[in-house]
Image (cartoon, rainbow, N blue to C red; front, side, top):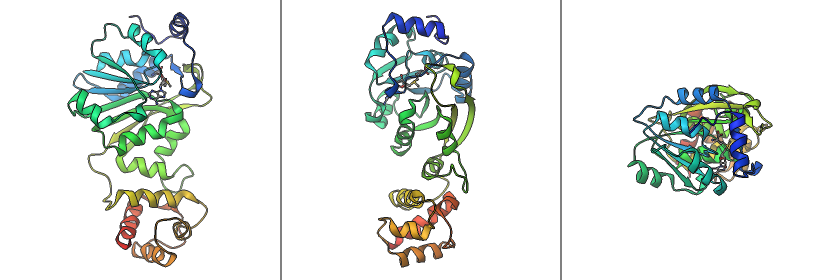
Length: 287
Ligand code: SAM
């Protein structure tokens, strides 16, 4: 099959099948081979690796993944793309396409079933409307993962890798950095998609850590504390945590903050992941 990474070829296929782009499914197809190579290089895929691609579209990136990897499992929600993928991926024996909503799939079970539990690489030009839920699903459901190399809206990528005391730092930064180390692979302009999205994009690599950077006694309390800490960014931690439904009163929150050596005037946005862990452990012990 001839390469799909050109606007002309994509238009040809789309018109042959009468395919209509769905904005609500985040369908912006990549047209630039250089960006595809940056994604492939950034993911350091070898012939030993098994890959999950989310949203193959018409299969442009999929073809390159198939050449680089041992096996590719592509999960596509849009039924109307399945016959197109049968044509564009004909001859790529190591690719399997499943017609599912990735957010509804039991991913852990899928990896055990399809890859005998081998740790997977996730590579995708993500549908931007569900970037965060997809990433958090892979991380929180403890899917055996090596890393994720994913394209997303630039602003979301900036939040994933943000450090304390910046306006981008928030509960998403802490949640993601608890599991992985994010690094930028490349910035991507609006012009290399059909149709062009309204936003700039970034490809980011999330290297999954073998062990979390901090010891957390109760993950649920940790995530609740982080979420509550950023719920009202202008308030001090003492006030915002007291108003949240963590189950502790103001005096108890004060006691926890003091026990962790955290000044009572500090705001959530100034806390490192380590401090969040210490605080949530102290709160856990009071519940
Ligand atoms: N990979 C293709 C490319 O780079 O040209 C298409 C990327 S496009 C940004 C996102 C793709 O994700 C679309 O094919 C869309 O139909 C698919 N998609 C959207 N929501 C999905 C979901 N919940 N589960 C699986 N696929 C989804």
